[in-house]
Length: 282
Image (cartoon, rainbow, N blue to C red):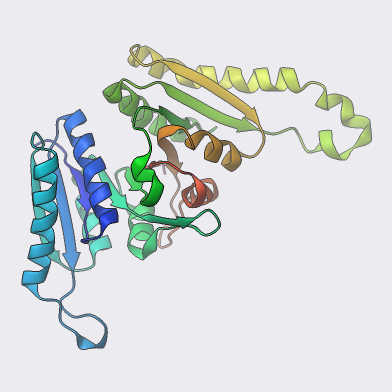
């Protein structure tokens, strides 16, 4: 059975944006789409959440997808229990999980929520976070941007996902890596000459990036790849590139028992204006 694309739905407009994105992805990858809604029968103050209410919410979401994506095989799954736990469990056999979020403004960033954080940090499969607000109106024909880590194992995990995403969309791929001058070049007057070697340092970082991209380029000759090597903070570079991207792909590091996803991923999640795919690496 093909691995499905799974979308967590909760009846909000943000989850419908995620369902729309997930349906398009399921079509590209020719795989089923599953809309999952988890709920608890009793909320705060002892107020009950009726099974019929949950079923109506899920059915409404499934009907919406079928009306807008007639060629996508979509089913709904309803389960009693914490939605984050259900998504993490189903993610063991999924191609990806798609979640909706909202972005209230440029200062506060966007709200992931406790469910999103638990899934982002624990899922065994890639998790894609879709924003509400102006993101729903952004063009879908931009490039795929991937932040390429220095570590070989981590880099291969994110590049595999990014190249596949670019290939299924027929989109160009921008492979980005930031670099920094050695601290001594900026702190010691006698070492200022080292800063003048910026060109050779950048060339060395570009060479390392090219080497890492080599096997994936050979595996996907149909994908147009642009190398992007930039001096400066990684987060600022990725947030800037995301502004014109249709998808930003990052690696995710996890710490057992925490919601840690890595400091770069955490910062980019708050400020990048694009759908973001977090790919588990370690």
